[in-house]
Image (cartoon, rainbow, N blue to C red):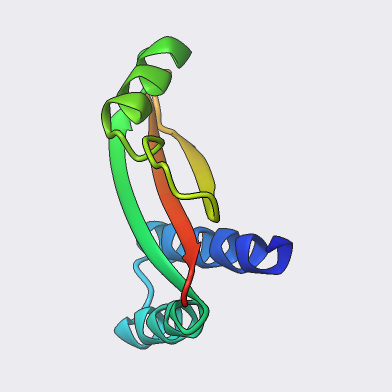
Length: 105
């Protein structure tokens, strides 16, 4: 499962890099292709969002409010990626991606 989480983390990182650099649409096709490879082995449910950073408690509260962590399946794994983006004048935003991976049967 570590390989899958590493792949998911790399995909999320590539999405943020593309977003910040304004990369070409062909890059998004590469991300979709890599994500499709994960879907062969796992059922993936994912949620991503970007918000202004206020406090660590607010980030945690928002993540918990998605309910992604509520899952009774034994073979469910969770992934969480956070990307912090500083701006001028001490303004900070963050992006969070949450995913559940369940082995396909």
